Image (cartoon, rainbow, N blue to C red; front, top):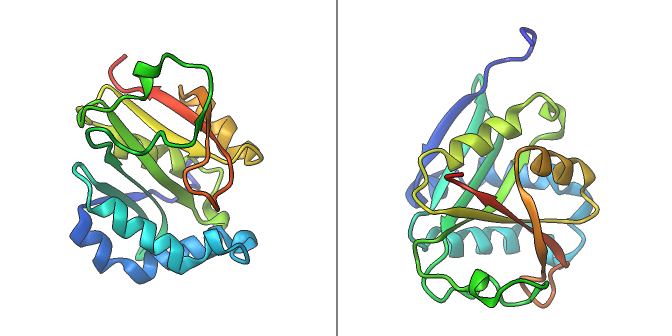
Amino acid sequence: MSDVPELSLRHYDADGMYQLREPLLTVYTEVYADLLGDPFFAPERFWERLEAYAKWPGFALVTGWIADGLIGYTLGYRLPNRSAWWRGFRGDVDPRMLEEDGKRTFAVTQLMVLPAWQRRGYAKQLHDALLHDRTEERATLLVKPDNIPARTAYLSWGWRRFGQLQPFDDAPVYESLMYGLHS
């Protein structure tokens, strides 16, 4: 793997996210190019979601750079007490698994790498950097069921199927995955 350029990881809070608005949106529009015709995936809607995530406690953003170019990023936040995250959940789990106390669960809301840089281990590096040193007991994320490369990667990294979730009325139904942070 010596021919794979080293990824420079940088950590940011909400203020840093706002400063990186244009590069973040540039990566998003390239990664989601095939879906941008769907209003849910429009860049403006995406940025509105990021602004909402950035307001929550425990918000974190990790970016990956090769030279001076942003090639990917991941972000998330701690689910607050009585979070609405699980609204729209479909699955057969103990209802207590869907209760949030403001300390229990970290939600990974994005993980993306530009297509030209995929399949080189960069997504895993971003993933690990985001979840390293988290104090929550578990993490959750949503993945489109037809995104076979992402689903395969997450499952190989230790994520487990938890159910399905439609986070917004106009959103797709995602597969909900769960990951133990301290197991």
